[in-house]
Length: 333
Image (cartoon, rainbow, N blue to C red; front, side, top):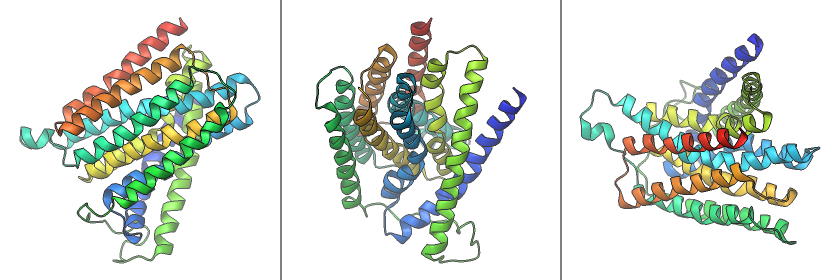
């Protein structure tokens, strides 16, 4: 058990350290590709950090040797959006409050982002997620073919983000970490740092997930319950770490864009894999995950659309995950 806890803390620290290099590299990559800060967060950063959890779903549903293993992939596809819509936003809100302790109340609570644009992201996500959840309640022969629709939806989202590019003010960038004295690093150096950091994040995240599940089982949680409650938090850790780093740097626009972009990926790519390779039928916990995710996103959409979202409300959204935990514990007991 000592080794498990040691690996748990080492892998978590490694993810944070590697994410420092990743966010620095991806910001430079966005600059090199002439993308705005928002597009950099929603497309580049989100796609990169979503690769580890998408890989978990792919391996579980394609190479799983039992229905239970494939169920873990479906659970990851449903748990990821839930964690992002609740805990990830709550972490950003809490980080904003902590970083602004010495400022006035108005500055402490204000979120300096394009809230209308974030509300459009929530609307896209909700439209796709409602279909995704609805498919988990019905059985019909051509359901697997509908996975293509989710891939097309993500492609359309990316196209929209890139077309809507260029409205943000240019962010001031820190020097590339592996070239600290180079004021204008080449694309080769930028790509090297970004890919290397992402590789380390993926390896550390895989180790972290394994330790989380072992710890859950050691404390008496059933494997399926541990996978449903703990694994999604572990696999979304890179996005949460990215958000913390960007908030610390005063770039909440990038932090929130990264979360909304990651939500779109989680609503489409893992879902497509699950629909392609499994019956995609939901039990009680998965239905509850879908309902709570939709409640969180409806609240986020309404508040962003009205332009009244602040850091305190973001923190309170995280309470919905506690409702899900309570239901899952009741369900398995």
